[in-house]
Amino acid sequence: MTTEIQNALLIHNPNAGNGGNGRRALLDEARRIFAAGGIHTDLAETTKAGDATEIAQRANDEGRHLVIACGGDGTLNEVVNGLAGQKNGHRVPLALLPGGTANVLAKELKLPWDIPSAAEMLVHGVVRDIPLGLATPLNEPAKTKYFLSVAGAGPDGMIVYSIDLDLKARVGILAYWWQGAREAFRYKFQHFRVIAAGKEVDSSLVVVGRTKHYGGPFKITTDADLYEDQFELMTLTTQSGLRYLSYLPTLWLGKLRGTAGVHFWKADNILCEPLGADPIYAQVDGEPLARLPVEFKIIPRALRLLVPRNGHSAKTKEAAKT
Image (cartoon, rainbow, N blue to C red):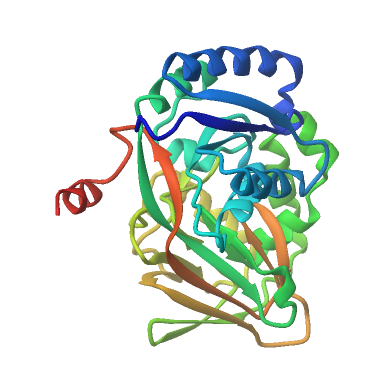
């Protein structure tokens, strides 16, 4: 850990992943670990959606040296949107203690799900600059959001919009599986146009990946790199719900590449346009965004991230030497 980091704010969502009082005891232990490494850590808990963004903005304005997020992907996305794009020249690094349903970034960084163990790794970590994705709904630009891990449009957007939040609170990621099975039989799988890197594909699904992990046990955009100024995107062209279900075993086995109707390529700017009047929804980091049209673009060096010393790519290590 760099010696410049001496005070931190830990933003905790007690509702993420059914954490509650049991998780608070683990957070107290994590705070003792950070203190032993010379970092005083205050705790701030969220009570409603949007709190984490406001708390992160205040932490930046107060000149904190580090913001630690404990929650799921939605909490992390809120914190990212509070820290990224600050105009006062102070860029507060972000760290993650896993505490939610999917924890895509924790998997990407190989952080243990045990909070004290994750703290032990991070207190000896390094700060890296990383790019972020920026999603702009062209008809509702006020809803523009940064995203850290994965965005998309089509049936995954509809799943995020339709999920029963009470069910998610009770059963976690299984709620997404349940909603996904329902959408396979009622969603229309209408085409929309994906335009990126000089290529146009009429698709029923696009996954815009900054990370290799997607959610649950799945990896989709496996050539994505958290430190690279590009997305990897995957599109599906089928309009059959049964065909979607047939892709699951292929995805589980890691053999989706090369399958008919599945396209992968890289780009730093992606435009998704509707082809009809029916609404098609987009999501960022598992949270609802807006209807298409939406533009996704890379913002280089948008966030400082505290990562385990073995949690950054060989490409980044080489760059650090130059």
